[in-house]
Image 1 (cartoon, helix red, strand yellow):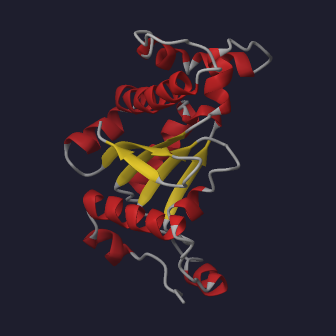
Image 2: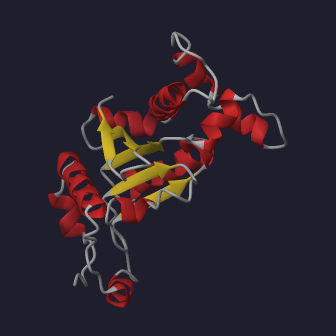
Length: 210
């Protein structure tokens, strides 16, 4: 039963590649129903005076994708931000910058998933309240998938998945374009920014090379 939490010394010893491997191994445990047994009260107590999360994970709000469980992570292991369609805005970019530049996280993961409701709404051109400007941030992903030869509707799950994957890639592009701080850190190899995609049927996370 794990009682410890990540320390400053632990973080100093980790590189982005090692953190990616830790997340991959955690996902394997998740899919095999062998989640790590943790002493949560002990972890709460040990993390009360500080935190040193190894990664920042941006995911959709979808309730079927429990981020910390998907990667088998405990208290103090990762920062998590959730927003429909795993898009970015100024507040999320600021949160990423705080996590990496000030708190020392060394990995940013944009986690997309199959059958994303926000992506489906963007494909269907839903217009409603604050949903409309939110979905506008997914439109570039639709343009990226414009060369697709098949039916470009939500009835075609192959097309929906293509747009979901394109949306992850577009979010990464937005991070690099709109955050000079994170871009510089990545260029200096202080952090890595990458995409990942969650399979709703198997629970498997596939890391994307970008």
